[in-house]
Length: 247
Image (cartoon, rainbow, N blue to C red; front, side, top):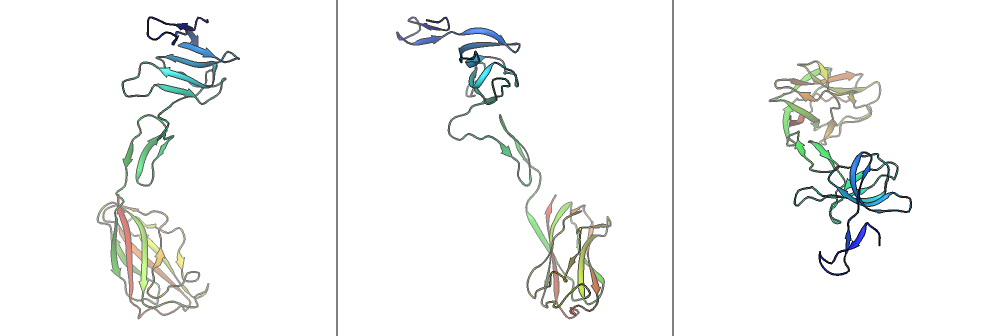
C-alpha cells in the first residue's frame, strides 16, 4: 500500500482509508497532495493557502480543499484552468450555482465570486409634467420645463388634436429640445415631420439622446422651426409632456 493511503483502525471502522498525503512545495506554496494523474499533475490536495493562479502542476479538474475557512463557508475549489496554467474557483452546492452578478439599470457593483454587493444609483421613479404650448405655424420657441431638482429627462411627447400631412424636405416642421440654462441641445438630430408626421390624438415622440442630465433650475425649451408651407397648426391644441427621473 502506498505511503499516501493507509488503513487506520484507531480512527474508526476497519477498512476505511485514511488519506495522509505528502506536503510538497508547488509554485512556492506548501500543499498537501493526496493523488496525482499519470503525468504527475495533482488531482486532489489541501492546504491553508490560496492557490496562486497561472501556476503549473495541477491537473484540469483538480480538487483543492482549503482547510482554514470559517464555519458555514465552502472550502472546496476546482481547477478550471489547465495543467500548465491553473485557475482555481470556489465550488458551491450543486443547486443554485451563480457564476456572476451583473449590475443592471440603476445599479452599480456586481462580481463573479464571493460576497457581491449591488448599489442603487438612480431613483427609477418616473415623473411627468405637462405644458400647454398651443398651436403654431411659424418658427418659434415654447417653454417646457424648469427642473425642480437634479434629474434626467427621459422623453418629450407632443399631443396634438390636428395632424400634419404631405410634409417633405421643403415643407416641414422640425423640433429640438434645448437646455437654455446650459445652452445644450438634447437631441443629436432634430425630429422632423418630413419623415415623421404628427398624427392627431397620438403621442409624437421627441426622445433626448444627449445632454439630458439637468441641474436644479435648468430651463427646457421646445424649438420649432418652420420650413416652407407645412400643415397649419396655428388653431391646433398642442400639449407637451416631459418625463424625467430624479438623479
